[in-house]
Image 1 (cartoon, rainbow, N blue to C red):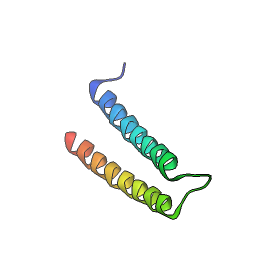
Image 2: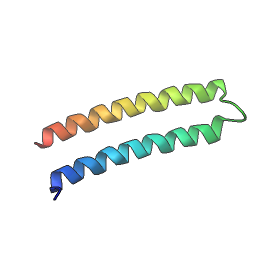
Image 3: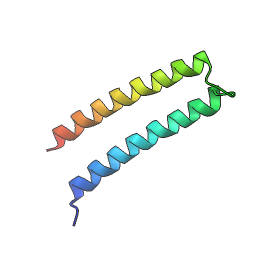
Image 4: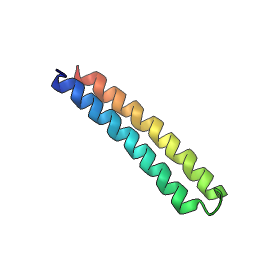
Length: 66
């Protein structure tokens, strides 16, 4: 059986990746008209930077929980 702490880590990880994918889909539908515009490309870079910072924060938070 999976303990409570492991389930929380799985949920937070899957939720963070789900948010990343949702943001990428949003950028694609907002800025992609047959191809990604320059503004859309910058938005993709911003989403990637946000995801890296988010995962850094999540990792730090999870490390403090132990």
